Image 1 (cartoon, rainbow, N blue to C red):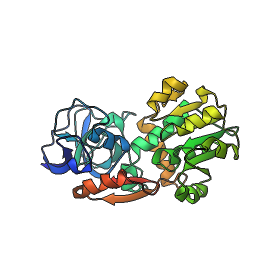
Image 2: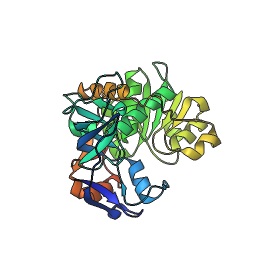
Image 3: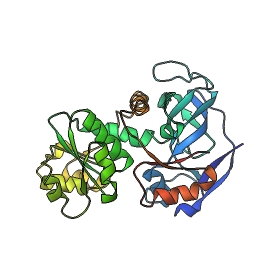
Image 4: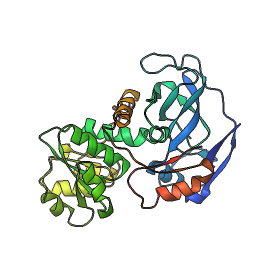
Length: 304
């Protein structure tokens, strides 16, 4: 037996509880991982609240991002390069119900964790990191670009902004004023959220691309500033996709190879990926309360 965070009804963070669960043995192509860190994402809160509907039976587990150590290997379990997964491997990735002491994952969807990467960073990297990588795969940028990143102090926006800067682009990032100095330290030119965003962006220059990593405010500003719809990408503004004709973020770049490459960049200090706070599994309610409130830039991570 191991323990996992679960819920029997949709609602606020207080519907979550920690209970014992019986873990199955990993089937063919799967591995059982002892979870050392599990990052929380806005998607997790939306699913738990019922904002994202699900037909899955109750009780439901929660979470997806994780890092940990392999403790059992199913038949034929191998990384995407064909290397067999071994018991004791330090891995990271995504698997359903990862806010737990143990989780079963598809071997082809995990990557080896770099030794120099802190486990809490690895545990919160998959969704935010690969969504940011996907933004740049959807709308590639380079040295001739000025990129407006909406929600630049969020986990996805932080990585997307730094990846764009690494490719030579100038980045203008919208964020709350309290996060502007942090963004400047990364090379981002910050502007405040809210009404008049397009005018504030124009003072820095006219963007050639927009990556909205929060809602749709940056997309609307991009339209006002004359950015072509095919040079704009959204990660959550689903209603704007048809209305404005912008790109939904593509998913083909969400691979274990890209996860490992991003992890290597963070371990080497080329990309900053801050952790706001860590919580034990028993404090899962408090962790989600923190996730769903205003907090400093970075990830909130459960460490079972």
